Picture 1: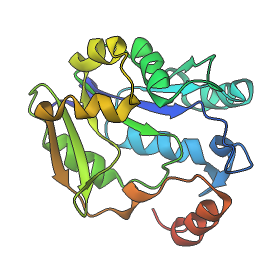
Picture 2: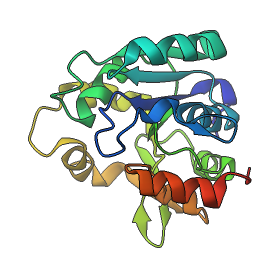
Picture 3: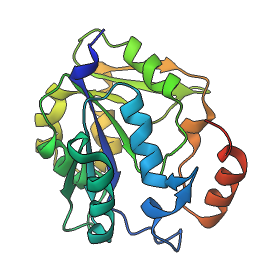
Length: 205
């Protein structure tokens, strides 16, 4: 198993939040912002640093994160956030990733993944090349733990299908571990999602 200092994180927060009707990263949750909940979950898993890819309203978000986290968070921006997909933000994040052995990958609107889920995925890591996904009810979910050595493949990938196709072509190096965490299902796309999440998780830690 890896030592703590060899794990990092990559969080995607560049999107337009169109379906939410508000700027998701800075919406309140558990006494802080949504994005802070997501970042804190990765850091609490033992990640040394977290790369956050910003885009939409980056001028508002970046100062908030810089002030709170300092060097623990590396900020990088997707200038084409309005016209590119998640894979492009991942590429930008990978270019900013400090050298490590592996990194957790997740969207910024997943604020309730349990620390135990990160740790259970990490426990399966033995340095073997590839990716480890948590699964719930047989479905692969975030956050996968991605081998740093996959970054050149991510940067070079240019076929149709985006991230889904990228994983499909690498089934041979993907492993899974089942987790008991409904938080891996929770991503907040709409006001309904947000209200439901606050009702269910606001008082939970």
